[in-house]
Image (cartoon, rainbow, N blue to C red; front, side, top):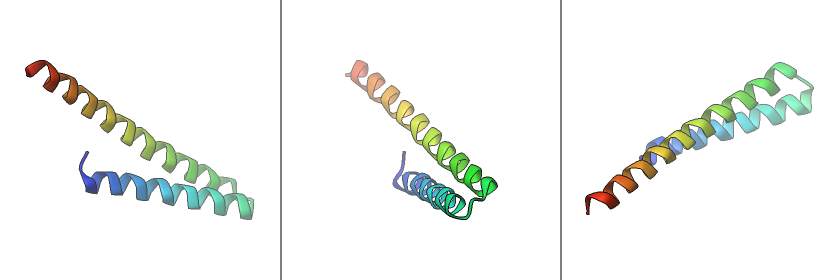
Length: 64
């Protein structure tokens, strides 16, 4: 996962946290749900990239 991909995922996660907190403060269920959804999407993307990196590391270990 490149630095820019990590930064984009982290920015999306932080935006989701902000939306969720604003939704909690204003009692806005739609905004709260959007925030939670954005956080989940960012975390899923990060997890997928971590799995890819782990697979590459295993492949590289067997190639040596």
